[in-house]
Length: 127
Image (cartoon, rainbow, N blue to C red; front, side):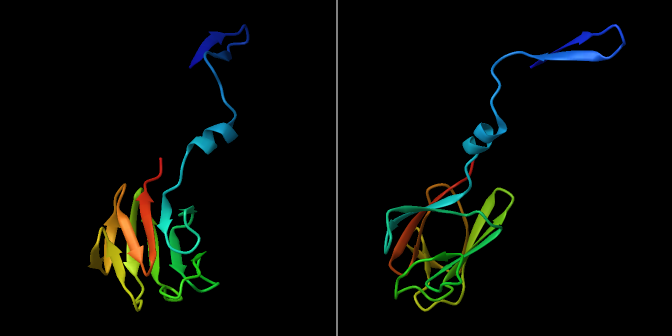
């Protein structure tokens, strides 16, 4: 909170009251939407959804590459639109499952389970 005080030249002087933190500490407190990989090659791990569009697959050119023969080269895409994240199957061989139900595309909510091939992730909303 800033408290203003007038100077003789008419400008205002302000003083911060309370604890201040460097911007780097404030930014560290902001978490991106992420996937907690709980099953499959490389698990357990946390996969950050840093871009507006993140492609997951077994190809080296996928944004998130997971070495599983049950994943297509470009298996699924996670798209962010503001705070909302949507997952879409990219015509993969083994499909996409949301909370155990096969889907082509779906909006994700905190705690949703997504399975692609033998990989299972839990969606975590950003803060």
